[in-house]
Image (cartoon, rainbow, N blue to C red; front, side):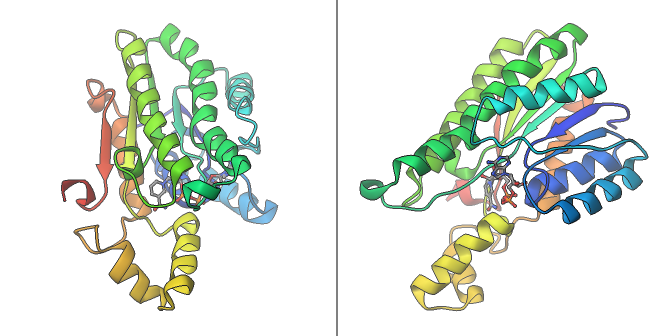
Length: 260
Ligand code: NAD
């Protein structure tokens, strides 16, 4: 039960972040929504979350390609609500390219959004959590924080780094009532994955369904996409009081990908 907890979920205008924000709102949290996107869709989401939680829902649009905006974002949430109890570093982007011609700009962008922004946000959030003796930080990493995949140098590096940041933060805050954990999803059919599915289907000259079945889900033993709500339920558990002794883990929610 997250009643009255102030929770910021980065990248919550879409996909997994949106599902996490919904689950938190349903659990009574005061949710700070964040991400990019269309004003109308975001307005509707703000209204929906407000109905679910009965609490005010604020929206922030900091662009995390400037990673230090992670600090400014947390700062603004704290200024608005007086504190931040739960931080979910979930915003993320992908770039697919062979290492030899990986664009340096794409490397910088992916590292900024997927790793450095989480550092700046965490750094800013920890002081207040420590002072109150309670805090939860959840990082959306990936199975690609644990193993590599073809043509994803920046993403694999950033997600491995994010798991490192998770462990380091967990250690630094272990005596303070604060936990920091990473969730490592396998394939989840969000807009981020859907774009990759479209590109792969075109390259392989297959339908989306065939590409999903014979390529994306070949290494996901459940042979189905992970649902956003399954990831959200995991985040909700890690933010509960029951999970107080779980810290520094990188938890696969991947239909068994990491066991084969
Ligand atoms: P998504 O594209 O649906 O959502 C990404 C969110 O991040 C959006 O809210 C978007 O506005 C925000 N965002 C993107 N760039 C931003 C920027 N520059 N500044 C601020 N916000 C920005 O993707 P998703 O699949 O829900 O991804 C959520 C997280 O899960 C990401 O960290 C992603 O790497 C990770 N992940 C996804 C999968 C998958 O299969 N979809 C698997 C493992 C991990």
